[in-house]
Length: 308
Image (cartoon, rainbow, N blue to C red; front, side, top):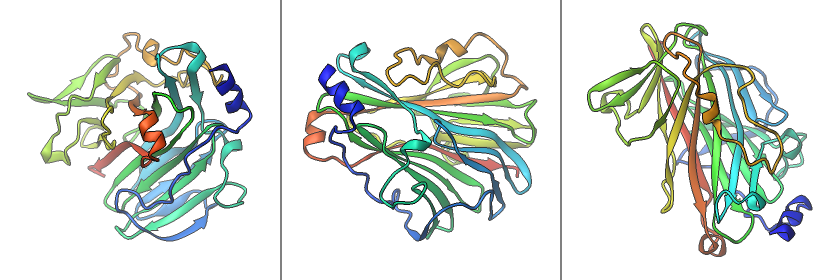
């Protein structure tokens, strides 16, 4: 595996090229290298940034003039090879601005798409050494939006998984007095302390089949995973914490093994507080899938603004 690590550094590992969108049956009707900032369209105001190492970062996002997200980013993607947690075969991929590359020779391979379903999206191609990713933020006039990552597979021809780390700092109207709820057998239950919540598969059909909500008063954002469920897919997990600016990731080192975010869970209250949520799910790659050029993995979350 040391030889393969060297290949990663030298950028000569074989990678599977990302297919061009459309994804999820939404067909782009126009496409252009993108520079408008903020995006103001269909009730949305979306300041964005090609961050140094957290992909396309959104901040101070509002819908119909009311704040919704203070910050949203993809902090990194763990790529872990079998036997899992073997330090010699572990990578922490970040979507760095230096790695936004082809298919077009723009300063950034960053695109704005109009969608036939009435929405729009911004997306960027990232060619991380040995792997390739496409990050997408997608928005619709009715107040729902998606955070998506398309994983192009690649890397070594051995069993491994990808674990994206999404981080969203919600601000429903403001940064304070937000609450978070999970849908359970008894209905919507507020979460009062920092915790780790597994996706149980329960969905509220009366709220767009969602699992969680961050709310303040009559406003809220319902959300749920929108992962493609491969054979070895592991259901997602959210980590609910009070927002702290220094709790983004443990390290920027590409082979840093300790990216266990559970250490951010230390008993603080998340009831009527400034709330941040992490989302993680695992998607596996195998020699068979590599050899047969399986379709890219698609993972992320879908959100629905309510009361806006």
